[in-house]
Length: 74
Image (cartoon, rainbow, N blue to C red; front, side, top):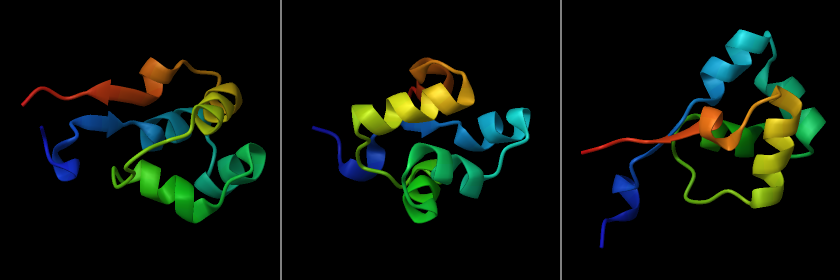
């Protein structure tokens, strides 16, 4: 079983925010989570994400989960 550090899921939140001209603080306010929590996600340090948070992020960014997350091969 892989270690938690080697989860191979990449988060593309910074790219999506830049494409939409939105700040992390603005997204956090719209989604109802803290900037710190989104920062952890953005910097690939999150160990999990709630489906409700993922859904809210996708709603606010007008994207699909696959636009936000991808799997990195070894």
